[in-house]
Amino acid sequence: MPGLKIADRWFERRTLSGDITLLTEPHVHPLIRCNIWHVRGRDNDLLVDTGIGLGSLKAEIEDLVDKPLAAVATHIHYDHVGCLHEFDDRIMHRIEAPRMAAYDEFAPLTTDAFPPEILEGIVAAGYDRPQDGLLIDAVHETGFDLDDYAIVSTSVTRTVDDGDVIDLGDRRFEVMHLPGHSPGSMGLWEAASGTLFSGDAIYDGPLLDDLPDSDIADYIATMKRLKELPVDVVHGGHEPSFGRSRLVEIADTYLAARDT
Picture 1 (cartoon, rainbow, N blue to C red):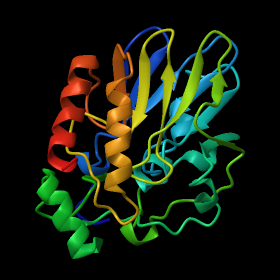
Picture 2: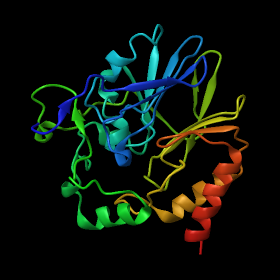
Picture 3: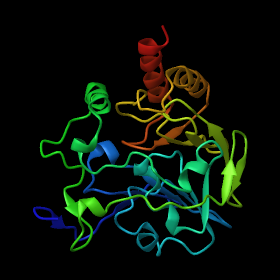
Picture 4: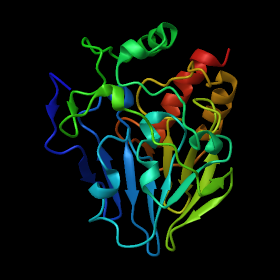
């Protein structure tokens, strides 16, 4: 696209520990810049969310993966499912999984494509609106046109529900259904380490609860549930990771504003 550079590298990565790697897309606006988490297990690996789908995530993590890998989408929104189709084992909550098969969800790369009421709500929540209206500042390949962008539809190979377990051999993640941001939003909870991958149910930034399929009553229940969880660290769908005290603070702030 004219005016946008070709990125030398689409993804950045940072190792949080020997078995958790954070991948991000630095050329994507923070509104849709999803945290992508690779977790190394003894028998299987886990990928939590897959970005917007411009650069190939499968190619990016090829050097990290030497065993079967399960790709989990914490929810249906386009910034989390862009590369889901690249992986053989694709997991979503049962409520939203059918919507991946013929994906027609809202998926723009410009704010001009947002319905005014949605854009107003996002700005009111605290996100900056890019002056040029673009949600990317580079492209991943020569000749790419914004009009070519679309999420690739794919079937989900495993549906999960609250209480199901994703087993990596030496690590076990329990599925937590955390609706509110979307009907099938979910997190992955590892009680042994106190680790929560929370998707967009909770992160340390402006939370969005007025999207077309959001539900504030569900979000209130989710926040109350999360407050009781004995977490040590939360790896959210956006923004930096945080601990239990910050989780409680974020939840209390939300509940004070919405639970009236």
